[in-house]
Length: 302
Length: 151
Image (cartoon, rainbow over all chains, first blue to last red; front, top):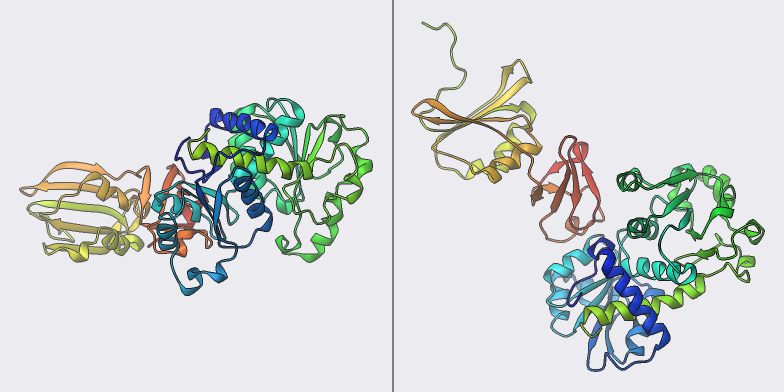
């Protein structure tokens, strides 16, 4: 994986996913190591994302590396009209690796083609956010002991949610069964269902959140956003149907965990937080170990 | 003596691109950059065709195309036929084929794609050829047949 950019979750193979997850477990056991000493990593956030940026910077700092970058393109030459091409050309002179978040889709792929150092995509519009997918996988592996044959419920906005699309692509290599629960307007796009059919995988689709919950190994919640609806009345009608509450989890398997890419608004009621099924905050912590694993393997240290 | 007349005069040597759908004729001209040629070109359009209703035809004197050049027109003229002419005779007939990759020719349908916002060639993998589906190399969105917009 040395010097290989991570732009899309499909850039890595199954073996590479497993290697990253194994390394992440090592970092969880020993999160303070000086292995990035002497390395400079640039974090270019052309749009603000405090959560992702802090997670990357925590990972870099924990391993003794240095960070240069910006957290809002308003304060950079991009606001003067500099192209992404030129910004990346310039920064790749300074840093050993570039972590970037950009509002336009495909920006990270373009950057990886012009940069002389590897690029890690920290989100390009609604397209890809592969480090999120790897931390989701790490959370599944850690809580279920395996990635194989999981029953994964994806709930909420399955049409626009990039996290569910990438997770579907990556987990489809591990023989899962998916349950897609969403309002009609936000159903899983046909292309992803075709992908599953091609791989010979089963999936179920429905509108009712509670129906099959006792079968779940993982419930992956996403937010149903009002701006996705053309008809505001339709939004009002469905908005409460996709809120997870503690009493819904009574018949669930003891090992079942609820994941969420965060930030949460109201789609998981706060009464779930104290439940042993709640895992979303631990999931966020796992992100630091997974990003340590990604950075150190791409830099060729691990 | 034949009572029929050829609508467009025959050429001695070169390429005839036939069966171009009439509305796509000038797109073919622009894709193949025929405006930059200084050899003899005859262009006919809205000619009668049993198959297409109205068709376009381009006769290019002393011009021969490589496969990857001519295949670029397959997106707008999928059933175009090529006749290669030597000494007024058709020596070879060819059809166009949709290539596996399309670079710098089609606009990505996604307005938030980097290729629509920064000076960079669009680039697609052809994921389906029967009903054309192009997957953007950058934003990974699909541009389908109905949305193909030639740059």
